[in-house]
Length: 67
Image (cartoon, rainbow, N blue to C red):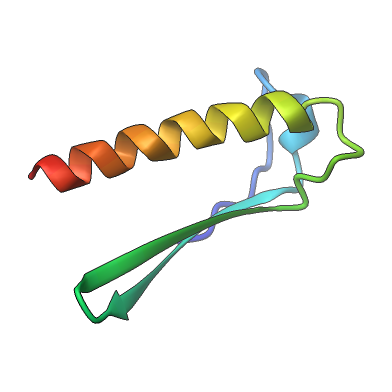
């Protein structure tokens, strides 16, 4: 799944970036990879976004593994 951020009132620097989730088959089930394309250190929001995406993905993992 690829999002193309067209507008963002909360984080205007995201406009033009592409948060992407890729699911692949793995030996023990599946693997979910996340990349936020064009979210680069030069953006003022980079550090905060990297931390927030990390927290979100950890919660997503915990939720998926609890099922």
